[in-house]
Length: 223
Image: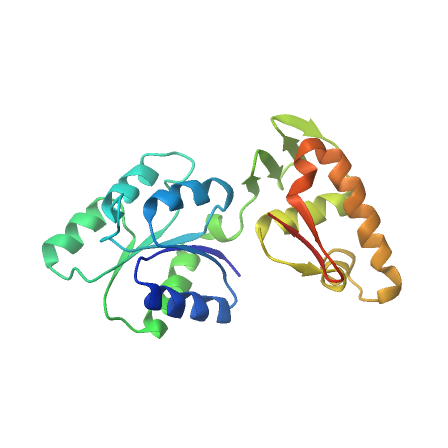
């Protein structure tokens, strides 16, 4: 599973791509303009960006230049999806930093294949050892967590919970899913264990603890 940001102003195409990406197991955030994408990317760090060129407001090429000039985002693979098919357009965007190019109309199967290949080429993106979200940084290599640039101490299970949430922002996890993933077992008897660890984690995160949202009768998500 990987996080994908889709920037496409054609509503029907955006819905089709989003549906198929989610069906393939990816987490997807989509928008119809690059201006909003610049805000989204602050909290949702994608492994891949799918970028249309002819967008309202900030154009796709301008967005590409902005992220390639930002050290925080410049390594994120970008696949261009565009109706522009001239050789000059394709060469110009590849030289500007695009990693691949798909001309509309295109096959969803081809798009999914390109994404799989791109993820294999970028192991650092698919297996992030440092995760950043909303001024929270998780260093998986050194087992450290920083909140608003100050280090905080977490138990092993709290660390695993936070890492899971930040790898999949906005994804809802049931209590049983959290038990299975973090504790390695599933039982309704132990769901209070999840609740108590979440409560402790929220307290340790201080003002950032409110990013962990309770979903009544279901579980939790980070937003």
